[in-house]
Length: 225
Image (cartoon, rainbow, N blue to C red):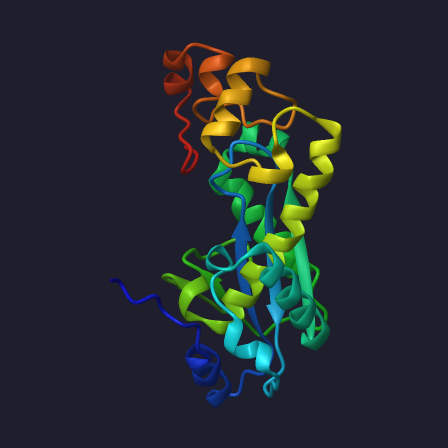
């Protein structure tokens, strides 16, 4: 059985040893969903933290919804600052998911006060943000600040999708949060796409236009041209 990593403060300690105190962890959720926004969070944690909840922090995907809710509350309460950035599906449909993801991260970072001195970002780098930064591979599973950002972002997006379920009933958005579960796909095939579905993601695209037209446009689920 593969041993899952536990987030540590190794990256944060390395930067603090160099004199950086305001270190923001940044992560996104919703990149692979078929519907709804992509949401990013940026979190600056204090140098000293206490509490039994610290041992429970993991990549948000590994936690139950109830556990994420509790941890998100703790993280928001102790954070020096946190910010959320949201990019709606209209932008995802026009600009592509890769650009939309970077924009959500940029918006989350811009919400931080005080301004961070260094960014630790899950996997990617943000050339459009003029701050020292590092893209950490598997950052949400290995870096504590990034894991906290993933939890805050996940809880925020899940709440948005529950609200959207009331506006677009019949798709089960409150249950699957817009991801491509068999139940969601079955609802799509029965009802067709809603205004918050991502029009170039499969299988949404094939319900709107021929697959060949989507391929000619050069879009994929993982990014944009």
